[in-house]
Amino acid sequence: MAMTFYKQRLLGAIIIIALAVIFLPMLWQESKGPVMAVSSIPERPSMMAQQTYQTLAPITQLPAAHKLFAWSLQIGVFDKQVNSQKLLDQLQKNKFPAYQKISQGEAGQIYNVFVGPLLNQSRLQSLADKLKSQLHLQGSMVKFYVMEK
Image 1 (cartoon, rainbow, N blue to C red):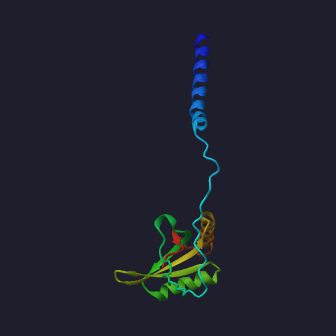
Image 2: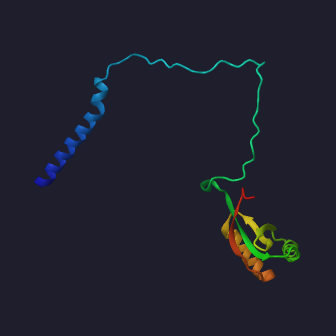
Image 3: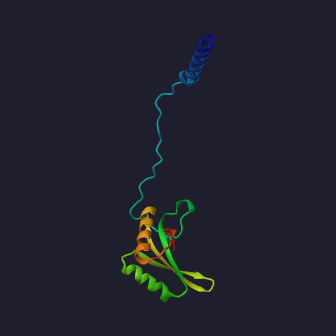
């Protein structure tokens, strides 16, 4: 019982000291009257001034933290465009959102075939299940970067 009494007294003293630390400096400050703000807005330029515009290069890469991405399903990788085009036509004929990406490999060009892209990973998984049941094709989920070249 005596211990809780001292705890309550100590807590009350701490609260009073904290309030004093917050409010006493406000009372001791001298009032300087209303504060006037000075604006540094430049004057309006004349209409006769020559305007020059700088042409900016298009953004090709975002910082790693700001890259936007969706999900795609990589179905196949081919070294001959005829084979990749055949698979691409088959997928598009069956109403799958398919596309092809050409990249440079050690032995020449590589043709990647993808299905997608979709923002929702679970929707892409259901599309992968549909692809497996209809065309007996499996793929692996990869990120599709929006700003990618």
